[in-house]
Length: 503
View 1 (cartoon, rainbow, N blue to C red):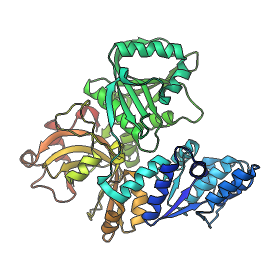
View 2 (view 1 turned 180 degrees about the vertical axis):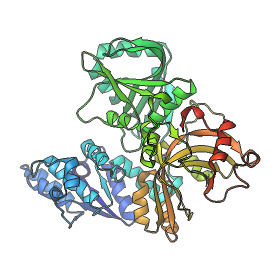
View 3 (view 1 turned 90 degrees about the vertical axis):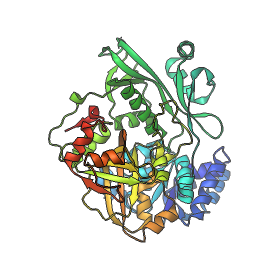
View 4 (view 1 turned 120 degrees about the vertical axis):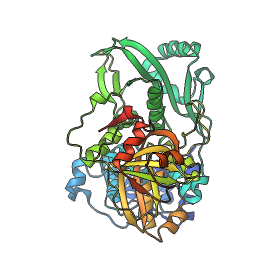
C-alpha cells in the first residue's frame, strides 16, 4: 500500500518534538509491513519557499528520506471534488491540503496520515475519512495490522473527579471558555458531590479524553429558547485531545447507554464553538441538534431518544442506514429490513464488543480496550458466500463460544467477493481486529466485508431458547438469514429492546 504523509507529520519527525519517538515507530511499522511511504510534490514546494535556510535544509533532508508521489493530478479539473473542498489560492495551505486529499480521493494512495483537523473535516465531507488517520490513530492501526487482536491500547477508567489534576492541559479550554474562577467554583461543587469521570490517559500520563455525566430533572432558562423541566442526561464535559482512536465514539456510546439505563429520553451538552471543532463534528454525526444559544455565544445541543421525533416515511435502504447513525441507537426493523444471524468467535467478539458483559454495570466493564472496540461503526470479515445482505439490514451476533445471542447491528456498507488484501484493509481501516497476515490469508478466497453500526446489546439468549422459539434449528456455523416472524418472536420474548426499534 502507498501511505502519504502530510507536512505536519514530517515536521514533527524532523524537529525533535515529543512526538518523534512515536512517529519513528509508526514509520518503522509501515516499512516492516511492506508498505511504501510517500510525500507529495506540493509539500516539497512548500518547504522550498521557507526563508529560514537552516530550517529549510532540515525539512528537505527529512523529506528526502521518503519517495515523492510521482502522479500529480489537478483537483481543480474534478468538479465533484472541487464543489466540496473549494478552489483556494494556488500555493496556499488549503491548496496543498486539497492536493493531498485528492491523491487519496483519486485512489493514487491508500492512506493519508495527518494531524491537521481541517483536513480530517474535509475528508468526512468527501466520504474518505476512514483512510485519513492521525499519527496516533495510524500508530495503533498499523500495530493492529502487525499483531491483530493481540494488540491493545490503554484503558478508560471511571474515577472520582476529585482524583484528577486540574493543571492537566485537557482542562485549559474549559478554563478559557468559562474563566478560571467560574471553573474552580464548578469543579469544587462536583468534587463535593462525589461525581465521577470517564478518563483515558495517554502514555505520558496526561489525560487524552474526559467525559463527565449528570442526571438532571430541571429546566434551563439561560438559553434561548429555554429548556423546559424534564429528566435529562447532561454531558458536563466531553473533551478528546487524543484524536484518531475513536474514543469520542466510545464516549458518545457511554452517554447514550447511561440515558437508556435510567430510562431518560434526552441528552444535552453546552459548548463554545471553535473554528475547527472536533466535538461538533462528532455530535452532529450521532444526532445532536443545536437547540439554543446564550448571550455570551455558548450553544446548547440536544439529542432526543423519543421515537416520535423520527420520521418513518419512504424508508429506503439509504434512509434506514441513516436512521442507524443519525438517530443512534434507533433502528428500523420492519419487514423491509432482512435479518441475519452472524456467528462470531470469542476472541473477536471480545475486541469488537469490548463493553459487553453478562451482568456487569457500566462502572465495571473497562479493562484493556482497543480502537475497534471503541467504535460505534465496526467491521466484520468472513468467507461467507451470502450475497443477499444489503445496506440497512439487521445483524444479530451469536457468540459461538458461549452459544448465545449477544449484540445487534445495522449494515452500513457491504462488499462481496473481495480478494485484494490491500483493498480490504482500506475498506475496514482502523476498525479491523485482524492482522495484515490474517487478511492476506483470507483474501486467498472470496472475503465478505461488512461495515456495520453497533446499536445495542440483546438480552443474552442461549441456543436452546433460540431453537425452542423457532428462530434457528441448530448452532449457526456461518451467516444465515432468519424470517421476519422469527425476529418478531425475539422481540416478543424481550431479547430485543423494542424501545429503540421502528417499523
